[in-house]
Length: 470
Image 1 (cartoon, rainbow, N blue to C red):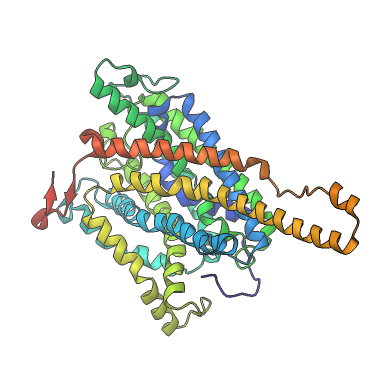
Image 2: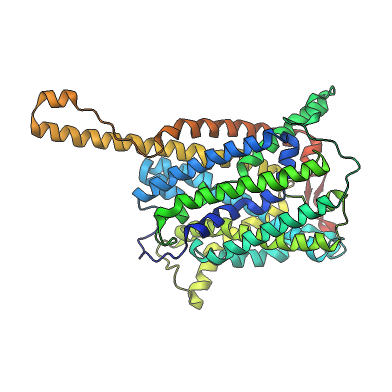
């Protein structure tokens, strides 16, 4: 369930580790923050972003401190060390479950970006997105063969460069394009929340919840903390908190820059997350504009790296299941073929879900509610509380043993056990934030499933093999 001991040989610095944490969700976040700011309020959205980012960073710090005390380099293994099979099962469910459910969405994002780069007018392959998914599946599967996050050191810089390029291009296009239907955003919430029409009001409140949900899924450092802060990956694992601070700062900067700017220029009605800059670009500028195609190219590269960061830990989990003694440093031909076989369920399941689930973004909303607040805040807080309790119990036992040997009743009565773990005061804060985020994400997911305008069309297949289209 945990990796066999390895010789410390990590080369990744804290700066690169911070870029990896940031790059995990940044490609999706940088093209969706406009929606979040528009639906939650041009003042309230940054406040919500800062608070959820802070809570998520604290959750990652909890995992860091526990990882330094235990020989565990993934979330399920860390849960096993501290809470046995219960901790392992929960860690496996919330972390690897999220990785698995995000794969088809990541495939769709890569496919959309490639299509937007090469065929913005949907004239090729009958305009069928599924065909583009089949094309990118092979490329995405190759990124899984990197095997370990220690091999994405240089790619983290490429991801950052692409995200910056997407932001610059998007802001330039927004600044040069007038939205004649612009409606100014509210400071708190969105204008339709005060509508006299009950249906519009319900839709507006659901958008508000979904916008807040994005604050949670746009920054998820806990998903990769245990995988990164060990001597196999990092040159100096003790520097990892700096990586958390860097990634948190970058997330807030992206949110405040592109999110607030887009809404201030175009108004509050910005498209759903993950779709800004793709599929007609809100019809405010031509999808075949060179700027749009260049934006999609940079987004394509960033999404590919994000897919790698998602699929590598999931692939390792499958490899541990099929062959826990496999040498991941062996890149011989036979070893590569075996590893491809071990990790093949990732791409098979990803493609099947991408093609046959009628609404991937509805599934993403549900997956976000069921995994992100737990993996990012609730599970780390619960595990850290258990760690604190274990430390206190151990200290009490050691103290009691010493007193029995000493035999002094006065010392026994006056002894107080005061040992505390770093940031132990933050456990209830992070836990509360996690449950609050869970309620918000759940409300948004239920609304998205229930309201047809937000749910969108339910489609399975396309062209001559269309199975469902409602």
